[in-house]
Image 1 (cartoon, helix red, strand yellow):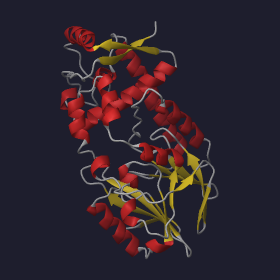
Image 2 (spheres, one colour; image 1 turned 90 degrees about the vertical axis):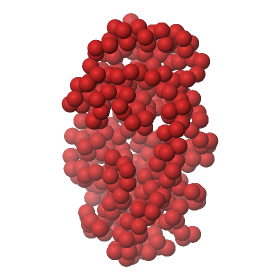
Image 3 (cartoon, rainbow, N blue to C red; image 1 turned 60 degrees about the vertical axis):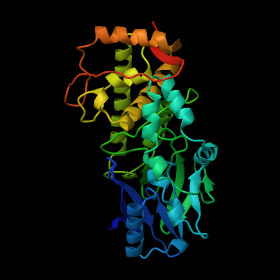
Image 4 (tube, helix red, strand yellow; image 1 turned 180 degrees about the vertical axis):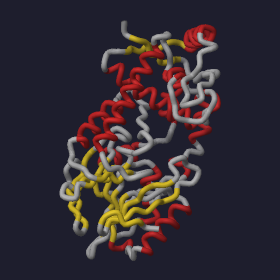
Length: 361
């Protein structure tokens, strides 16, 4: 059922089956001329039915509507192919479009994960079932590309685009200065932290994300409309919490590496995660993937700050070092959120070389 948040601005909760996120916040802006739909949901029946029902209740005609996508993740972009009409403008960012155009599958990501210690075969099997793979858009309509500061008007609202890289390379927010509204996608979320992953040596997404938080903190905002969960009032307070969270993550990574060189997979196994599992081995593979990507983003940040360095070692050497750490730390308790259980066995990735991170002394 549509929820009116401001005059002519509604929220539709689009269900995300089998996802801990539970639903996507899609926002609908109505005007006598053209409507605007912000984010869409996965390309699956439950999402389409919820979207169609909400649009019908609001008497929104898709032929007189445009679509704005905050970023390329399937829970935001996936349903576009079912909603797009010839008369629509589909607003999107240039970096995200270039990523879609250059996409050649998960192989490069899996190989990089293997270099960082992740068991490649397990990851490949899990990614085949990933919602981004199963429920993405079946075709890409013509996209109208936007950049920082570009205007979008709909009825009484005059938005401008705010580029906020971090969660993804080309993430976009919309800011309405007069009404002090920020439509934030997955840039700022309330009771969960946006996932900041890194799967290449050439990027530093955590650095980008922290800069994007500073950028949006400078805006005068009274209400944040996020892509998931609750609406946010005091955006600067929440930004402060998010920045402290990542500062604590960075400190934690440094403390873990004080025990010796480790791969990102091994580092992630010892980090604190808000998931109800007794050991690292109990984590679902996809949660291990998210955690390892987060660990890499923090290690890359620390590397560029000059606090850690990396080395590439052969598989046999990496395994010997791992066995030594297991003997020394067999009784060490992984700091889980509220359960304090053991860290569990660490599995090994494939490949001839592994990246190990270590402190700079």
